[in-house]
Image (cartoon, rainbow, N blue to C red):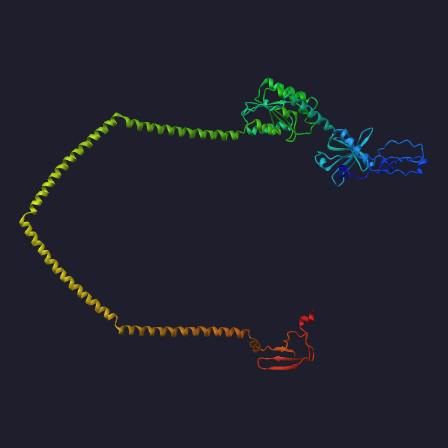
Length: 560
């Protein structure tokens, strides 16, 4: 099956054509003479020739018929479709929509007609999702696509892949032709486009004096840099004469050279509304203008020929005003920042120069002749002090030597040696007396220490101490046992009280009783008990056996 069948979900369009309903032509039968002796011919697969039977017995033989190529409807439709698709390229088709159908699959099925004919068309979902409008019956449209054939029904149809309204389509073709022409001439080259001045002295605006675009531009310029003067060149921006006025005004502004930058602006609109800016005369005027031109025509999605020729393209008129006028607040911040940087650089430069001046003064002070003279004088004073110290030291050493020699001479005297010996004898006597006294004192101290140790290790004292410890332990044990007994007694009383509180016997002591039936089951409800049943009532002291005379239900059960 052909691949077109996957995409074509159109509803049936009435009865099939006669060509599809008619049976395939049968091969010609042989002559009546040969019909009895030959079998009828059988049809072979496609492109296989059907040969007629040949007379074998009866001369003279029939002449051989020419081979026939028999087509099936499917084969014929397939080859017709291939011829249509290969023979006709992609083409544009203009007409009025009729019989429009939009099934749930998302495909569009419709017919395009004019005064003399109509043609079935299909536009599949993958293609119609990009359409800018919703088609309706009676709408005049321009479509682009290819001619094909729907094989299952043999319908000749047009497969569209693009659709636009007929009026806009003409303008689009004119737009593309002019765009191609001007691009080939180099009017759109980026190399010829000029930059915008950072701070224009005057800004020119070519636009309608009564439109919203001029107010937007003036508001933006006033807010961003109110001190820049603005010169308005009033023109018509829509109509038959608008393109000529716009071109003449641009040439006038270029000749007068009153502005540093020129804004060509207009508010948003349809393609027809913006067509004045797609004219060749306007494009060439912008190209020949000696002043940088900023184009701000329409909205961001709108593109005109003027946008491609202009030096800078802005998405809107307000955007064009923001491009040509710097932000005064930003400039103020930049100037303040540059001032701070200049002051910082100046302070740093002055500090560096001051430091260099101090260094030069120090260097000058180091190499000054007076400094060298002061150093020499200081050296002379130092040498003089060292000479004086050396002389005093020499005299001191000589005096010391004389004193030592005199002392040595005195030591060698016999009288001194005798006096020394007497002194040593006195010292020895004193040392001997002191040593004897020390030894006696040490012996007495040892004796007293031994007596003290003997008293401390006496068994009498240890026995008395142990007896006191035993008495203290007995008293402590007795006190501890009494305390524990009191605690256990208190805990026992508390547990007995709690047990007595939850005991059923205590409940019986308060006048209550426990009733059981003949099986010993506790009776808590009077409903299951019947008159004449035996019950046993347990009291605090003893029990009672009784027979039920009457069953009285609970009051709540009576209410229910």
